Image (cartoon, rainbow, N blue to C red; front, side, top):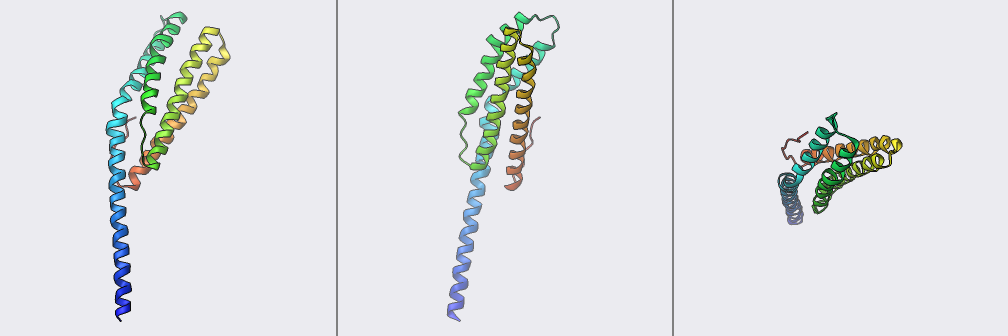
Length: 167
């Protein structure tokens, strides 16, 4: 009887210890995801939003010339978006799942940056095929951005973290 009680006690201690470690791990992941979303990404996402908004505004103005667009891309948009990409790559989540999501975001951003550069080169060289191929880069960017968001949603659901994704 003492052996059975001892075994039950040992099993109880093992399971209790495991659940405490699991709770601590969940808390750490929640803290890291919250920091990632509310501090790391929030501190730089305005650069990306401003870049995309200024690009869309610029190209929707029918009075802009190709030369003005080239100057805008070279002197404003690409350096601004490159700054965003550089800052994004300095974020280094330690949790494997968050790192995976972040890597998707970096990849999406790199495809977008490549699209802006390809568009610029196509305009400079009057190369319609290069300009047409920009859509492939943009589609890849969108796909990785979708993967990023889906991964974050999955992590949040897994660890019961409530947050709202911005569009």
